[in-house]
Length: 279
Image (cartoon, rainbow, N blue to C red; front, side, top):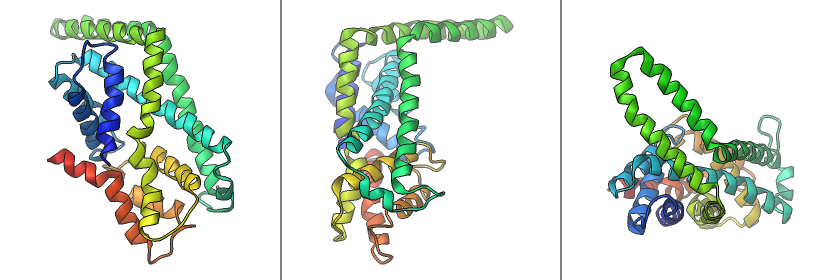
């Protein structure tokens, strides 16, 4: 579970050093961990980005640069899930999953395919934002100008926002370069350890209750569960995560083992990070 902090912090550090000189790695690890904490205590993981930006601001990184770093880390996450899932399927994982499950008429492999396509589509859209930051900043400038015409008071406040937009645009432009793409590549690789607890928690919890299973099959299922939890309407996916996990992992669990499995799985997935974050 500590990889929420260490892996997430290293990924932020790799990205932040492209837009800010010498970001402190200790501070970035705290930002990564507190971002994970924020995601686990809010619906739809909405608290992750504000918490990361707040933590980076505390160590001296300007908000627009922190926002750009956070966006790039999200792009890295989406790219990681989109690519890693296809690689796992190419290596032969998931064949046995086609024989299990019947959730909305889909077997477990179908469910994974749906989530993987969704992440791939989202990844393409985010890459378009990265490749054309000028279009995005121009659109936001036009909106702020239109709002400013309605009120002088609002216009005065929007001057600072325009400066922030320009700074964010400059930061995005930095990433649209060979060095920036290399940083994004490293961030995608670091998304593996950053999400290690989410991806490995299912397999570890199965072993903890004495169940043997194919590692890569369980990895695919955990990837699907992790993808779905990004859209959970409850804080940390409470209730939603447990029901989804029981439905998806039913081929491996008996009724008696399911509560213990869920308890171990949840500790690794969220509760250790939530406890550490509150402290």
